[in-house]
Length: 123
Image (cartoon, rainbow, N blue to C red; front, side):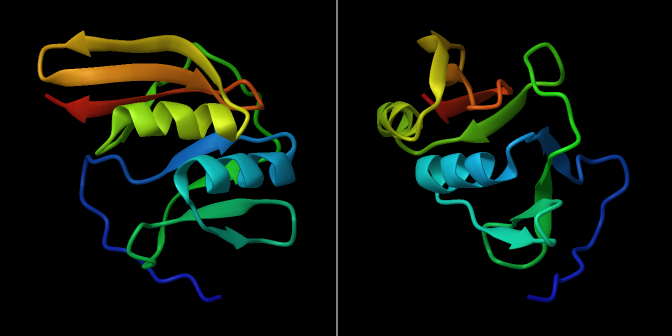
């Protein structure tokens, strides 16, 4: 599949890369939990396709070192409770149960490699 070039915007987040020492397991997890699709680069890297299928928004890097403590990537959910269940069903670990904050609710999880991400929904 040819990757479509997306327009970049000065000083905005352009791409997120997650450490994925086991590239296959990471692809399986994110596909099962969130329905993500990937561009495969010969088993050495997987680009995360944009939701509209045009370009990429990030990647899975098998050379990275996973773990909590870096930048926190937040995903949005229309149904937070269903997303918690999907993360668990896909093999993720909920590291902080859903809680309320001004403007909505959120939770944190660790993927099978140990990367910590969050998911939020509006109030």
